[in-house]
Image 1 (tube, one colour):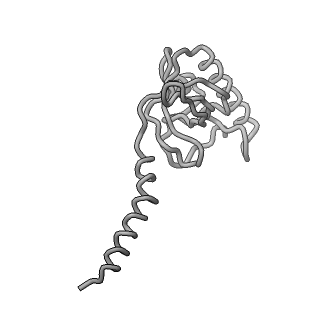
Image 2 (cartoon, one colour):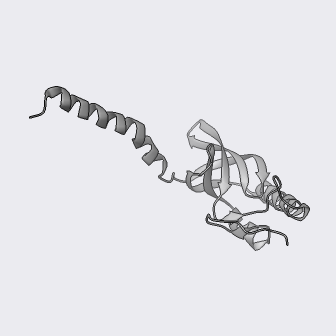
Image 3 (cartoon, helix red, strand yellow):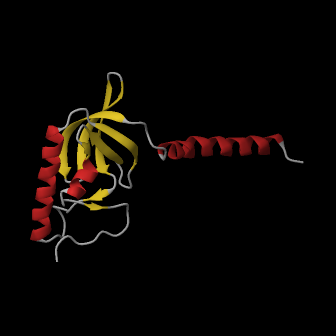
Length: 150
């Protein structure tokens, strides 16, 4: 009914689909907890880390904290929000300076290329929770963000 070339063509299409799209599905899975060291705090909820992914193998990555949103210091924001962003950034710097044994958990790709979402956990607890408790952040799980200043 079908020629041998037709079956080869179908198999070729399936192989191409697997090669092109299977990695996309693999990247949507969360990674196990990973030890990390702070490179730079970008703002209250974004940090650059060196992450140990295997013994003697590390990668540099930008992490957006899960579960929290802090004020923005860039873009079309008021002076009030910039001031709040500076305070949130300083809080994150201070919290991470005190931290030992930093671990990233529930790591998954973020919506922006080159950035992942993760919980940042250290001896003193969860950074997202600490930002919220200190009034420097709000719970956030996606969607439209509310303004910080009236």
